[in-house]
Image (cartoon, rainbow, N blue to C red; front, side, top):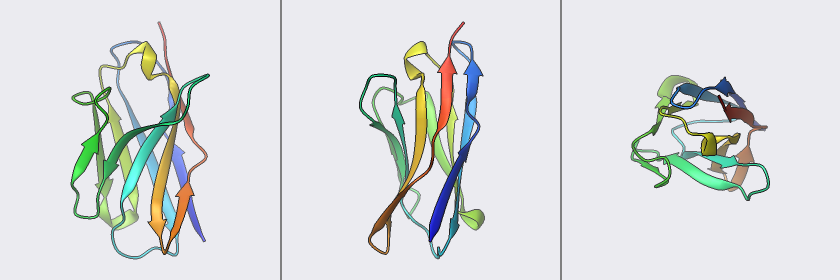
Length: 116
């Protein structure tokens, strides 16, 4: 079994920064593709950023230049560094491990609220 636990969410003012963490544990070996998604109130879940097994990274246009994804190789932990936060970044942020022996795993989410 694989578990993902996100942390780091909270309330921040516009223009502020947060770092989200996602720690994966369980039957894992090697380096996996990991991703962040978010779901704003009343909206569908949307992709935010991905880091591939060879550490290639990509992010959605809406966060490009403001958010960065990184990983800690030794602990199966992935981070989302968020800067210049906007009100529209308010959402629950979810971590995804899309393919572990054919199975996908989601975390429980961490809430980010951007408000003055």
